[in-house]
Length: 111
Ligand SMILES: [Zn+2]
Image 1 (tube, protein in one colour):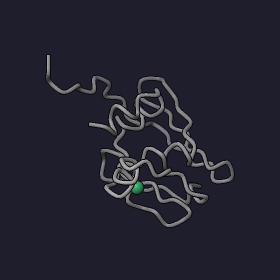
Image 2 (cartoon, rainbow, N blue to C red):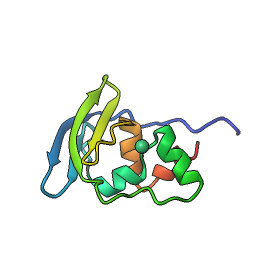
Image 3 (cartoon, rainbow, N blue to C red):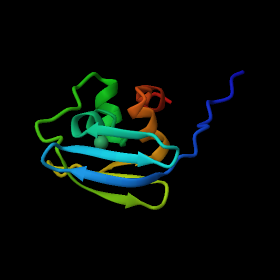
C-alpha cells in the first residue's frame, strides 16, 4: 500500500497552442481531453530546484513576469516553458501538466 502512485493516463498532447496575448497554454490530449493553463499557474507549479526551495520556505513563486514567453519540447516526454522574466528551468512532463490541469499538481510537486 505504500508504493508511490503511478500515473495511469498515458495521454499525450495532440496539439499545443500558446496564446501569448493571454499568456495561456492550450493543450489537446490524445484521450480527448483538453486543458488551458495560465502562465501564473504554470509558474506556481514550476518544479525546478529553485522554485521548489522557494516554495518550501513559503516565498510566493509568482512574479510579475510569469507570462509565458515561449515553450519548447523537452525531449518527447514533456514541455519546457520559458517565462517572460527569463526563467527557463521548468520542465513539465505530460503527466505533470495533466495533474496541474486536474487540480492535483501539488501531489506531484510534493513527492
Ligand atoms: Zn522554477
